[in-house]
Image (cartoon, rainbow, N blue to C red; front, top):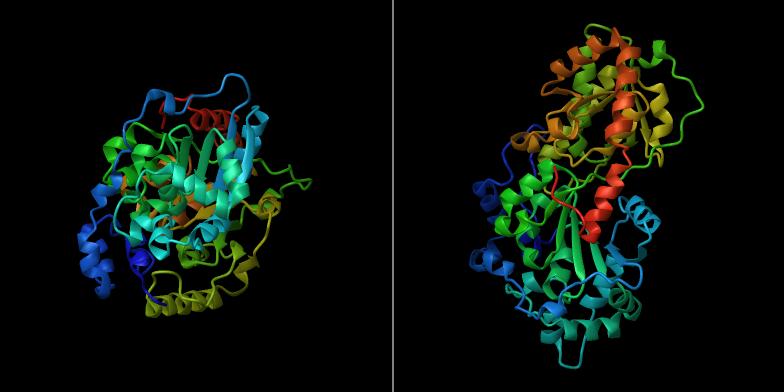
Length: 452
């Protein structure tokens, strides 16, 4: 794969092997990654990340955002992936706010393909990657940006002009681009999930122009604050609002406690970051004592392609170890492949595992809890410093080793029905609460105070 200065800037380091617990914020780790790009090393060293946090020029108070009082609020949602936005959009429209959507993938291509008569220099000036390509702050020139948008993406331009609030999903390129030119009369809201906090986008977004920064979990907020040069500026506008969740329809089936008590499920997504090998190791530990237990892996299986930022040799070793242990455990492991609605299987399961290296909120766990699965959450290695697992799922059973998880699972199996009912009630009250929607709407409109 061709390495570019863009790649070098945006991505830092990923663990070379599961279990690596070295902090990704470690300057030495970041420097090793930069050293992989020798052609651009000098240019990278000259990049002034602090300068990218320039504040927009002072403007008259009349030019800043003021909520309208003669009509409903209007919000434009910008994203290239609306997976976690559907519930937000539904909550917003139910509250009386008008909503429209903009596909960032399409808009980005139209803007970057822009070729005015004045040539490449002007085109580059307004590129979504300008801050990286030019190594300087975009000029705060929203009139020209608006004019270009009307030319290359007229429908999106009309939506942006129509909206009072611009909500940008994912704190990456779109957030950096909008924060560089969006008129101050528009309220800009950016939401960060997880992966963004491990990238240098933390220093490429003009935080001073963002009115509200939403984080889905407190450990992601704390990691982001540690990694950005604009921590002081960001702290006052950072809010934690959990993902909005829709409870799956109640199953018509009845849980067979005698069967489900021996079934453990875990969500996988075809990458090693969920660490299914660790889950197999948990099952192996359990079956040393009780061979009735099974592991059910729900989601896309591991693929042959080397994951981003993993060394090929390490990935081959991981696949080899996974295949060997999978074969050893034989019929006690079932892999379902991708399922659009995994909740249909939760009523048959008794326990839910999270063995991930890194997570934001791991929605699979909350959904399984609601159906009565007892949760076991690994102390996510890349978030140990901020106790991410403990803060996201404080009532769950936490573990660091396969043996520790095995002991917890077998201990709870002796009083399964009692513990299962407790967790189903806990999930309903904590993770599927109506107050989450209120918090998110208030954050979008500017009506909320900071909370954890």
